[in-house]
Length: 357
Image 1: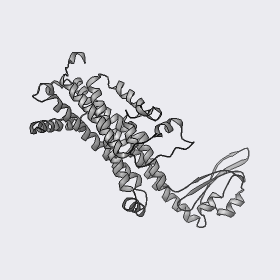
Image 2: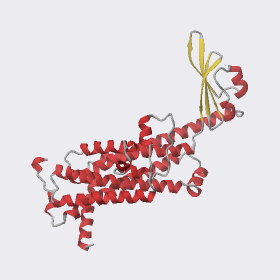
Image 3: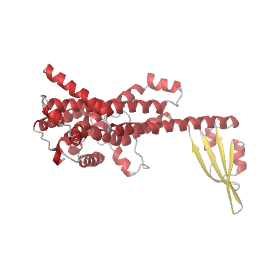
Image 4: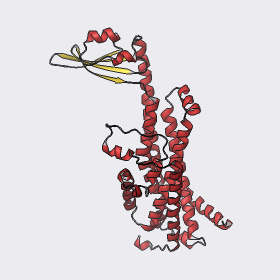
């Protein structure tokens, strides 16, 4: 490539990076990236607090085990529960109705917890909560990543950044500075796109790193060492980072191109979001014309779908005929390159009329 074109691309990219990171519109991107971090931070704090409380309860019930707690069922009497588990670590009288006293007894072995609900002398219900499970947390992270992070956070973050690369400058009445400069229009498109890609990738990949760290910080160091050093921890983390960067690439080219052709960004954003959401029920040929189809084929953890999953979530989780990882990466790169070429070609004849915007 011509060295002059490279230097011009770098110059445009530097100017756009400042706008992407520090523009007033960037405030929403940081909020989107921070939202799942706060979710996992709340989960970690809740688990840590419950663990300390359960350890205190377990010290008061040295003979209690998880196997014994699972044996408690509705219909048992207070004496039978006491004979099996001993006196409760906590006893709370919740109410008294028609002369019948209702109580809530709590037991723990230091990790799991059992709540026994009495009405008079009879057990009316139980609530057994096991200790925080590493495997379940891995599934939770994968579900949040696919349903919440990719489809909403990264998606709308790319809407804000890439559509505004051209449409935002038209609204600010500043695009003509680029069009009047002695720079090829394709160079302007390339510089703006690379700036948006770097900005969104850095912001959302940093969010993934924080989510992954915060989610796992409440587990014992030995468990994390086993997962990261000897298990698949690094593979999972790098896969999530790679999928996030590819999502920024795929959605970025889509919305950059849309910003050049359409005035209202809500129309392409809503249309593409609906298209991505129904990808699982589309015909095989049409499924390939979406970004999420390739991204789901690259996610490292499969989300199990059981009968208790609501139909809308089951539809989002459905991944019919996933492609091989290398095909998914190549497919995304080809689609992104084609859209970027269309955007560059369109920029050659771009005319602006601020009075019509």
